[in-house]
Amino acid sequence: MANYLGVAIGFFVSFFVLTRYLTQEEIGLTRVMVDAALLFSSLAQLGTNASIVRFFPWFKSEKSETSIPNHGIFGLSVLVPLAGFSLFALAFLLFREPLLTVYAKNSPLIADYFYLVPMLTFFALYTTVFETNASVLLRITVPKLVREVGIRLFNLAAYLLYGYDLISLDVFVWLFCGSYGLAMVLNLMYLRSLGRISFRIDRNFLDRGKVREMARYSLFMTATVLAGNIPLFNSLFLGAKAGLALTGVYTIASYIANVVEVPYRSLGAISRPVIATAVKEEDWAEVNRLGKQVSLHQFIVSISILYLIYINLDTLFALIPNGADYAAGKSVVLILGLAKVVNSSLSVCTDILNFSKHYAWSLLYIAILTLTAIGLNNALIGPDSAIEGAAGATLISYLAYFALLMRQLWHEDVNVLTWGHLKMVAIMTALAALYVAWTAIAEPALGMHPLLAAVVRTAILGALLAAAILGWKVSPTVNAAVKKLKK
Image 1 (cartoon, one colour):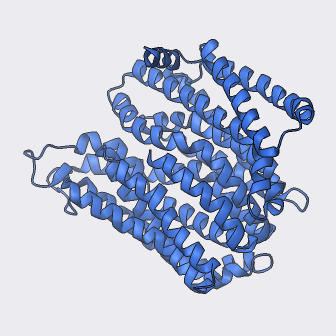
Image 2 (cartoon, rainbow, N blue to C red):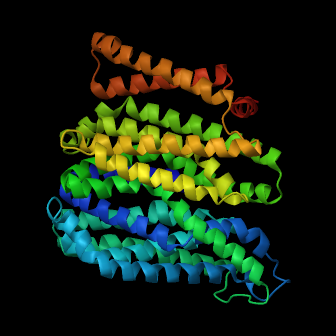
Image 3 (cartoon, rainbow, N blue to C red):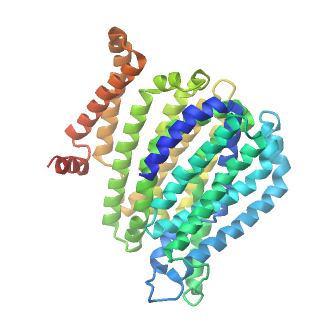
């Protein structure tokens, strides 16, 4: 529920507030700052979040077992990222001038606020750390509300204050960064209210072997977090090579494409602890079953959402303020949306490998993914195809990465793909052709108002999509759920 409420608020803010009150350059500025902070914070975690999920079954304790809840895993999860952030802060001081030089020509506005990136990185870092701790305690609703709703509402207030000239650009940027600090504090307060965390570490519980295993795993995960952050390279490269205006166009397009991943955020947070337990017990039959279930249903939902979004893009750009300035991002929505579909439906492969004893292989695959993404961003972002090139770099990188990852999992007899995936590809191909025919022939003949045409188009094509999924029995689980609902 938190994710979908956040999507509704984000939809309103992104398309009816940002596009009206902020220039393309200002939108690009906020995007580059946030993406830089998210990338740096993911590295500063030093693999902590993955370690929390993987090792929590070992640390988990009942209240009667120890005076330190869960043997102090929360204290470790706070201490290790602090060391990582210290390393980042030092690197930032050393390389600040070279980084500013990269953006000086095409994005000079970044130089005025680049000093806020470390603060934003710290806020993003511990917002995620506290959210992960809540996840392993199976208390994810409030942190999700904070991330998906709280930050957006606080930013909405900042946008409106700036849009009505009640605050300066300097104050606006500070408030924008402060929203992540507020999220961090709220998540910490919620965790403390649960009474199952402590900043103390149970040193008697930790033996050298366990510490070495956790350290080794965390170091490997420091590299693997790049897999989930490949899209962040796009805005950073765009800002440097194409300027903040095009980055702003790309930002609005990516907001639309990001809706595709919304179901993955919820199901992923729930499925990871379950998969971690199955991998720990080496129940590979169960891991295979879970992988297929998660992947198929993510694929069904994500590609269906992308289809319903894409068939209404022209109407959306016609409705939003200054929509003509952002309509150039239509192709980006499709390309980046397909990348989101690939990532959301196959990320379960990453989870399985990372929780297994073969997690070291992740280093090789992440290195290939990162180098491919950097190389493609540099090659494909050009004068005539900047934003399309950035989106294409993400899609190609993900396809190569997950192909290698699935090949690795076959050695454990794990294959997340099913006939249901192939059926969905066939259904979407047919519906894509039907959409082209509908807009080229039926709608001009009917001569309806654009809004009414969008409603009719969505209703008819959406109904055909649902009928095809149920009629072809793409997912027996979905059919069984619908049958039960009818009863």
